Image (cartoon, rainbow, N blue to C red; front, side):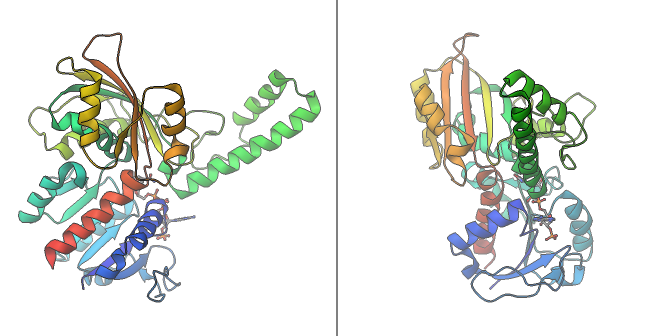
Amino acid sequence: MKKVGFVGWRGMVGSVLMDRMKEENDFKLIHPVFFTTSQIGEPGPDIGSGVQPLIDANSVEYLGDMDLVVSCQGSDYTKQMHSLLRNSGWNGYWIDAASFLRKSERSIIVLDPINSDQIEKGIDTGIKDYVGGNCTVSLMLMAIGGLFKENLIQWVCSMTYQAASGAGAASMQELLTQMKQIGEISNKSQTKSSSNILEIDKDINKFINSDKISKENFGYSLAGNVLPYIDSQLKNGQSREEWKNQFETNKILGITNDPIPLDGICVRVGSMRCHSQALTIKLKKPIPIGDLETIIEKSNKWVRVVQNSKEASLNELTPSAVSGKLNIPVGRLRIMNMGDDFVSAFTSGDQLLWGAAEPLRRVLKILIKNSS
Ligand code: NAP
């Protein structure tokens, strides 16, 4: 059995990956070894075959003993350890949730329901680095990948509503703390001003904008607020999160010469888990909505068209409706006022599943199968 080293298994993405692998009995196919950057020697996770002490994730020697390494630790770790390991002569498969290797010409961004052909080609041509895509990019492709595959799209503008969990475990905890703190201010305020909502709102807003609220991770209050900037600032006015949209979508689709333009604004909102996005799609030619729905639904077995009604949208198209599920609902599909070739769509998906852990879990199985 192949030895597979797991780094970052206790973080947001890593924990969801562990759960999915247990659910699908994937650990039976491999010999797993668990690493840590902070808890060396402490007990590792119980995956049903006894608990082993955690190994130093900064040891080239121990990592080099693995046939495959799966890292859900983050780009800083990958930047440091991937090159050290490769420079030591290690030639195993490296699977990663972080963005650092996505730009490399020697990596494949994996989303096998959309690009299994590229993954197979990568294996045949000796590519050793397989990286999960940006969460909103992968979710958007799971939702409307069929329209790209049929070459119907001229460009896409996506406005995102990204959950706190997209920023990691500590940020999710911070949102909960902020909500609790705001609740306490609200209780005090209600007693003081006996339910004058404008007075209560004034007290809460003052608190949100003060240094008293916990904001070590986000830098601002996410609770009771929206944050219209995710990741670092680029010179062209985009955020790095926004830049990933066009680059990664085209890389996943294997379009290198004449990339499809994709752009938009990425926004952090106070939902706990699951990213949503509102899409404006410019088609190459007008196509009836019914035909688009058929193409979307045929694309993969997880995507589902939601009827464009108020009731269906509010019941089926929200972060809380998809949390913990592999389904990818797409709704609000209609021709827009701008013209017959403009279509709106709204989609919500669990960014820890299809947006992160699931493509990694699946590519691990593909690589194991191909290397045995
Ligand atoms: P995370 O939750 O912050 O976990 C990363 C590491 O932080 C853990 O493996 C753990 O490493 C350490 N850690 C410190 N305090 C922790 C705590 N209280 N609970 C759990 N772990 C703690 O990061 P993540 O969101 O999983 O992201 C990992 C990588 O995946 C990043 O590169 C991210 O950009 C990418 N990604 C994330 C998402 C998402 O939705 N979150 C989606 C796609 C891609 P040790 O055990 O070694 O200390």
